[in-house]
Length: 450
Ligand SMILES: NC(=O)c1ccc[n+]([C@@H]2O[C@H](COP(=O)([O-])OP(=O)(O)OC[C@H]3O[C@@H](n4cnc5c(N)ncnc54)[C@H](O)[C@@H]3O)[C@@H](O)[C@H]2O)c1
Image 1: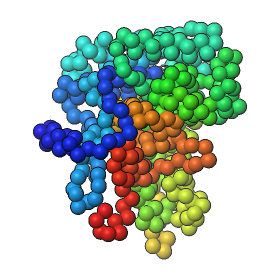
Image 2: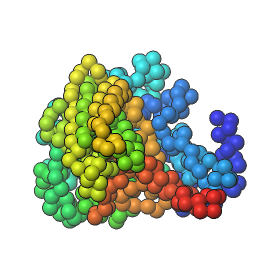
Image 3: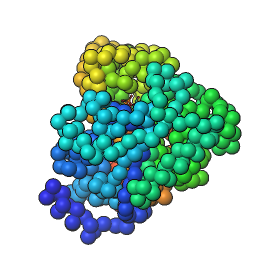
Image 4: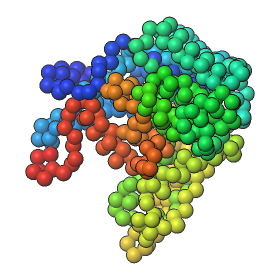
C-alpha cells in the first residue's frame, strides 16, 4: 500500500490532461438481480473497504499498465492513468423477485464464508431489493412474489425510472451505473420490434412478447443516460433500438455475459494454439454446477441462450474459413448440468483434441474447479467503474474496449466481435491511455525504444 501511495504521488505531478472529468461524489451501482453474483460483489466491496480482503481479479483496483517507452519503466496502476471512482464512495441498490435483504441473499447464495458475512451483517441487511419487473415466461424455473404490477411494459419502465430517481436522491449519488445480474432469460431472436427506438417504444406500449424484462431495465437506464452493462447472455441492450438510444442519451453500454470460468479459459488457450498454428479437431466442454443459475439453465429454453453465447467464442478466434487445414469442421460442444451438491463451486471440464506437425493428434484436458461468483464479482466491479469512466469521458454507445470482460461481446453493426483475450486487453489498455491523454502503444518498437 505504501508503494502504491508513492506511485500515486509521482504520477500526479507528471500526469497529462486526459478527457475524463473527475470522479467526484458518490457512485450508485444498481443491479437488477441480487443473487449469488450481486451479493458476492456487494459484500466483497464492503469487505475490501473494511480491509478484510483484497480485490483480487479486479483491474480497476489492482491492474497496472505501461505508459510511454519501455526505457522509462513507467508501469503505474490503471487508477493512476485515469480518474476512477473511489471504492469507498460507492453505494449499492437493485431489484429482485425475492424480498431477501443482501445479508439473507448472500447467506442463501452460500458463496462467502458465514464468518465474513456475519462481520458485514449490519450494512448488508440495510440493502433491500426494490420490486422487480418480472414475468415467469422468460425465466421458467423461478417463482417470485416481489414483483411490480402495471398495465403495460412502458408503465413498468417508467416505474423503474421512478425507482432510479428515488434511489439517487435518497443516497445522494452524483452518478449511477446499472449492471444486469439477473437470471438468464429464454432465447429471443432480434426482430422488427427491436430495430428502432420508435418500434421498441411502441412494443412497450403494446406489451410485445419479444420485449423481455431485462430489456425494460436496460431501456429505463439508457433513456436516463445511465451506463448499462449486461452480465447475462440474453439480448437486453444488444438490439439496434437500444444501441441507437444509448448514442442519443450519451449512455455507454456493454454486453453480453460475464466471461468467467470455462469461456475465460477458452479465450486464453485458443489464441495460443492458433498463434502456434496448432490444429483443433474438437473441443468438448461440460460443466456441473448447483447454484440457482444452474437451476435456471436446466430449462432448455434458458440454456439455449447460454449455449449460443458460449459457442460463438471458438468460431471467431479460430476463423476456420481462413485456416481450413487447421480448423475446418472442428467439433465444439458445450454442456451445462445442474448438480445441486456442488452449489456455486462449479467444475468445468474440457477435452481438447489438437493436432501438430504432420497432423499427429494430441489431447489436452482441463479441469477447472472454479467458483462462479468469485470469478464474476470483480467483473461487475470493473464494468461499473469503467462504464462510469466512459460516461465522464463523453463516450456513448457500445464500449468495445470492455469486451475483455464479456463472453459474447457486443459489436457495432457490420463488425465481428473480438474474443481473443490478449487483443481485448490491448484495446482496453490503449483506450485507457487515450482517456488519460497518453500516447498509444503499437508495440512496433522500430527504434528499439518503444
Ligand atoms: N457467476 C458466473 O460466473 C456468471 C458468468 C456469466 C454470466 N452469469 C450470469 O449472471 C447472472 C446472475 O448469476 P447468479 O449466479 O447471480 O444467479 P442467481 O440465480 O444467484 O441470481 C440471479 C438473481 O436474479 C433474480 N432475477 C431474475 N429475474 C429477475 C428480474 N427480471 N428482475 C430482478 N431480478 C431478477 C433472481 O431472483 C436471482 O436472485 C445469470 O444470468 C448468469 O447466467 C454468471
